[in-house]
Every structure is written in structure tokens, then in C-alpha cells.
Amino acid sequence: MKSRPGLIIELSDDNGNTGLGEIWCNFPSNSASYKFQLFKDIFANKLLNKNINEPGSILTVFEDIKTIFIQADELGIFNSILSALNCAIWDLFAHKKKLPLNKLINKNSKNKMKVYASGINPSDSLKSINLGRKKGIKAFKFKIGFNNTLDLNFIKKINNNISIDEFYMFDVNQGWKINDAKKFINKLSKFSIHWVEEPISALTDQDIYLKFIKSSKLPIALGENINDKDQFSKFLSNKYVKYIQPDLTKYGGISMLGKYFKSKHKNKIYLHFLGSGVGLVTSAHVMSAINENGYLEMDLNNNPLRDSLFTEEIKVSNGNIILNDLPGIGFKLNKKNIKKYQVDYFSI
Image 1 (cartoon, rainbow, N blue to C red):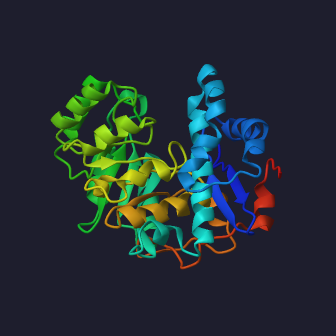
Image 2 (cartoon, helix red, strand yellow; image 1 turned 90 degrees about the horizontal axis):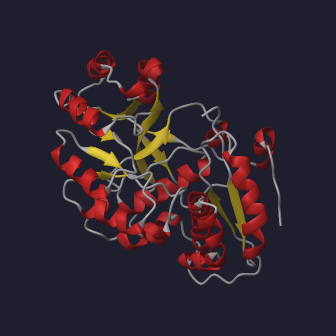
Image 3 (cartoon, one colour; image 1 turned 45 degrees about the vertical axis):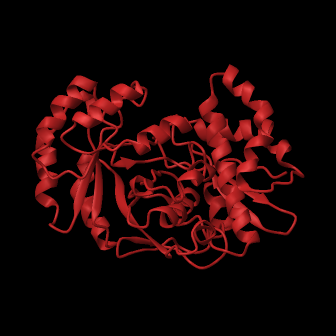
């Protein structure tokens, strides 16, 4: 990633409500501009004057263009744009009901969500831990797996700098071959690691992946790159999978999780997120509604599109993102600040 990009959709209904969604666009570096153009050229006109009866029905509006993306071998782009639209529609429905998004999903939701700090590189690890501690954060995720190796000295340093009331995880970002992963995890098992995330390729055959998870001496987390409902269900229901991490901006939006709002497995869901403030706050609402005892991912790197995106600052206190009682996601875009960073824009 050469920057912290953001691609935001703002939908309006005929009652004057607005809903916000975020399209995943972290990389490649021109991903945001490419998806922006596809949305403008292919998706936007199909939204005009559509009657949406419930958030999931947005999916049917675009069924006739899905084939284009299948033939272009770009179904992932179709999914990420549709995910953003689905989240924006949920936000709209919450505004129409005059409810916060999390209360629309679960009336007993609390106005806060615990977070863990992520996006931490080895070179900045101790600095990042101290930065997170100032926000009351007690969980930290570090990047490892560069060049298909294991840096035990770095891991020992982290282990020695984590307090007794804190915990830590490592994200390999699919960096290991499966045989190396088995060997490395055996070496890591002597440390108190909360989970090892995506140690191997997300394209690994599901049965092979599940066998690998079963044999692992440490908990394995995965899910940000799952793009199939059946596959998600199989991982979620497997007793050896302790943490599954769908990303609302990449696949399925909020509606994909709808069937799991009351599932006995919902405590395994720890939403993945790395992007702008829109996706972060949306994810916080959904997490607070379905797994209030879990932790939401929050990138600790400097990002004006998170910290300056709204008219109100996103506050993290005692390790929690603080939500409010306003309808929808509860935050409005700061158009003045957005213009400082705006690369492209269109309205229809």
C-alpha cells in the first residue's frame, strides 16, 4: 500500500435520508480509481428510482450485470462494489427507522465496541504498542511472514513487551507455504499468541485448510478473503475454527452475515477491516450487534480518511470505539475535509 485510500458511496432516498458504504480498494495502488470508474459507468444508473424493500434486495438489482464481471474474471470487484451498496442501504434503512444501525440489528446492542490494533510493522512495533495503550487498547496484531521466514527475535521482543492484561496476534498475510507454516507454528506454540492469521494461501483447498487448522498448536484466524457463502458457513461451523474474519467491504456486506445474527457460532466472528472511517464505523455497529464480546480490527497507522472524514471525531476510549444514538452509523461526512484529499467525485 502506497497510501491509505478510500472509496465512499453516499446514497439518498426520496425521504431525504442518506446512507454510506465503502468499497474495498486498498491495493493495487490504482484500485480506487478503477473501481470508481466501474461504479460510475456500470452501476450508478441502475440505482436510480429503484424501490428497495429490504437491504438484501439490492442484490437483485445487479444480477443482470454479474455475468459481465464473471466473463472479465473480476467477480471480486463486483462483490466489493455490491458490498458497499448493501452497507449503504442498511444505513438508509436504519435512518428510515430512526434507529442506530446496531440497534436495528439487535436492540440490546451497546454503544461501544472493543478494538485491537493492527497494521503494525516490526520496525514500529514498540512505538505502536505505546500509541495503542494511550487509547486503552489491550490487544495488538503484528505483521510477520515476510519472505517466507520466521523472525523469532522479533516475536520474543513482542512477547517480552506485552503486559499480563494484554494479548497479541500475528498476521502472516498468506506468506507461508503449508509445510513451512506447520514448522513455524510449532516453534511459535511456546509463546502465548492469541491467534496466527492467514498463515497460508486463502486459495488452499478448504478440506486441506481445515485439516491444517485442526492440527495446529495455535488458533488460526482467517476469513477476510472468503468470497463464497457456503465456504464461510463451513469454516464458521467447524469446531476447530475459533476466529473467522469476514470483511463487510469486500464480500457480502451486512446481509451476508444476516443469517448469523443469532447463530450459536456468532461469537467466532471478529470482523476484518482496514480502510476509511465509513467501513470502520459500519463494522463497529455490526460487531457490537452480533458479538459484543469480540474485538474489531482497527488500523493504527495515520489515516486522515479515518480521523478527519466525519464532522465528529471517531473516539477510542478504554480500548473501545464509541458509537452514538443517532440514526444509521451515526456519523456525517465532513465534505470540507474530504475535498482536501479528494481525487475524483461524481454525483447523479
